[in-house]
Image (cartoon, rainbow, N blue to C red; front, side, top):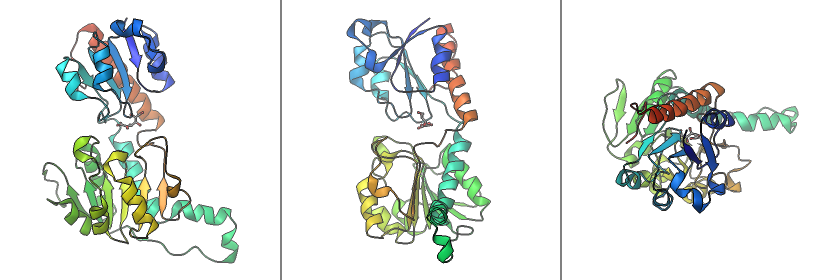
Length: 305
Ligand code: 8YV
């Protein structure tokens, strides 16, 4: 039995599963009397667990993240306090990569806009205009970890010419490494953001990169909103300096700038990369298994640090 602080909303099944043997306190209900009782923080990919919060809770030993990304967790503060952090890698890779491909196709082939065209009755007056071909085009992947590589494998099925930019070079047959993000963007028809969030990748996609992608280029983001300079992207969209955008993540979720709405060349989704029933259930199980291992004093399944 542990007292768990829930930093963010997580699926009810996970809360129910953990409630069986533990007490769960939501962050907005946390009172100072409870500070010294909290042993575990349950976070999500969107949570902000900063040093101020960590330092209020002297007995925390585990931060269990329901998600692969842990950019909202102050890892340095956790390390200083000998707190272990776990996440849910691998099991969501396929779903995020699937959505990335879906967004790319939706933007290029204008699938959402074509549906709106039917719904507003415009088909009676003529055909929908031709859109952008994807098969055989150039795909630039920013961040070549598990998700970036899963996107590359899928894109190979579309005969795309694949390049990537990443902190480290890793050989994959038929995929070209670019040492500069601007040169990758210059040589891409679609730029796919799969990099981890955090300080290092903050606004990696800026005006210069968007300019290099060019007015026919499409940008897709399934990583973190922070990786793109959203103001620069909005300006590029407004001035038709970019061909289109498919965005699952935003700088200030759940707030999405209205300027992204109702555009034929922009497709937006509410951070649903890992949101399939099967994957969310697997993520919840992995979080519970990590917490159970921690409580039993056994090795954790997926520790980050
Ligand atoms: C989840 C995510 O949406 O894995 C991540 O890093 O951002 C997503 O899978 C999130 O953690 C659930 O709230």
